[in-house]
Length: 203
Image (tube, rainbow, N blue to C red; front, side, top):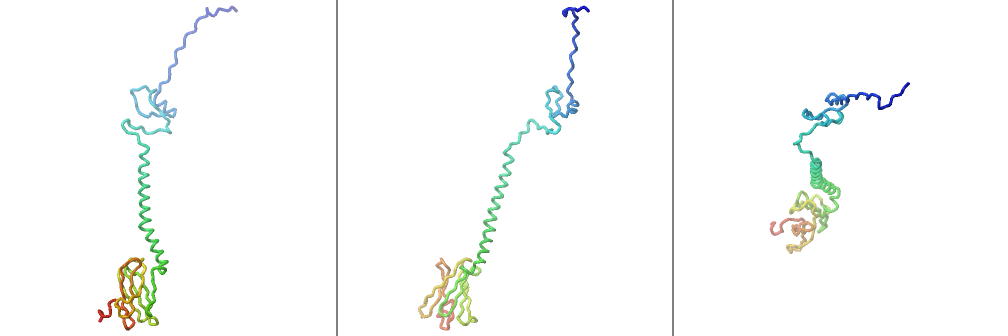
């Protein structure tokens, strides 16, 4: 068999160039992609595509991008309002309720005063905003006297002091509250009772 030189062999015909497949909406949808926006005036190769699973609604160009801090503002405002409501509840509800409860538990410790004078046992307390005194003769509780004197705070402590205010030789009892200069005198009488007015004015 005779061999022919390579240069003498006929040149093979050139193959026609392969046509690239045209990008269409159908071809991208078949591959799992969809068009984000319809842009017929542009080359389909220049159109942005994304997976169906991650498809998001496109936003117009004139719509501003939401700021990250705008979400924290209402959350912070809500927390601030909640804190104010909590403080208001503690100051105006819980603390007064707790003070009232502890006052009931320990009311007799400091808020009821006892005093002995001239054969009488005096019991003093602040009841409904007034100093209330009970004068009980020893051995005769049926002859007890009740006096409602000057106004005072509910938690005030009643104090007693013995004086001869009208200089008649009969002891009198001055009653007030601790830390207050205001006091009321109960005048003793010859029949071992007490009166808000001096014996001369009571006749």
